[in-house]
Image (cartoon, rainbow, N blue to C red; front, side):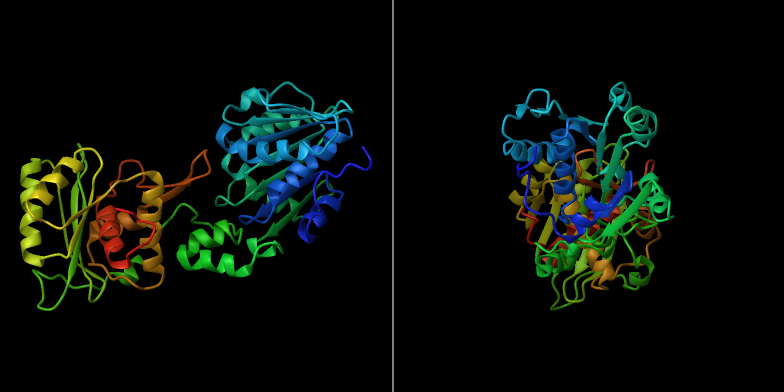
Length: 396
């Protein structure tokens, strides 16, 4: 297929990976470095030579990240057939590229492959490689490209280490987002200013972080605030409210806007909602908040409507995975920058230190308490902090 242009010339880092003779290549990259473009290009080159290539992602939804540019670039190949229903590209030479997901590793068995790209493989099961894809490469002595941002020190990290050990078949690279010459460094710097250090280091610097599941740092260092029984003259306050559901607790967090300190924390459960509302009203009468930011999901909405009718300055916060991620990231950044101080409350400190992050099959991040633990005080604090920081992406 000489003379056919599959894509523009690769940048320096991509070219180094393309030219390297290793059979198995492990590419640890920050966001927007260009790992998807590199993998797509490799798949089409293999298909153009008559080989069979697979693009494999952790989930069907994430596999669209590869399928879109594959379709787009395949349109540049005269005579190439794009089978959208099968998510497959057939080249005039008889080669093919198929897009698959690793939700069920057993579904990847059975076909001999010339090449496979494992996209965001740090977030798929290791069995997809060891039990399904690696054997599929055996009869054709096929090659593999592992591309991902890190996810702690899991099997992707072990493969990356193998590629650093002068193995003749394996080689690995680590590139940050700054290594893409087509992205302005100022754009990446802007992301650094808005993200917790842990998230930025993993997602943009491509660092393998031991405690990748942990979220909040410098918690005990920030636990120096002093309890206030009520408003101090001339001060403004904000209250964050996380309503309890079933066995969960309702938590009320009060932050002094003048000092950015958590000055009161209340936590209770197994009491009637009317009593919970009464406790919130009593707290508001003591601190006279400029705003009360309360979760509006489920039973929160009618309660907020009633509080608004009663004249309380309540703003609802609807919790989705995206809005919760933004909320928690803003609070984590406040701890890292030393912008917030909290009460030395054992429950709050324990919930903050145990809080976890995980990557969903869609590629999004999800924050939550570990199984069997609560996050009520964390969420109440995060809601209150959103009123302090005026986080722009939190639209009430």
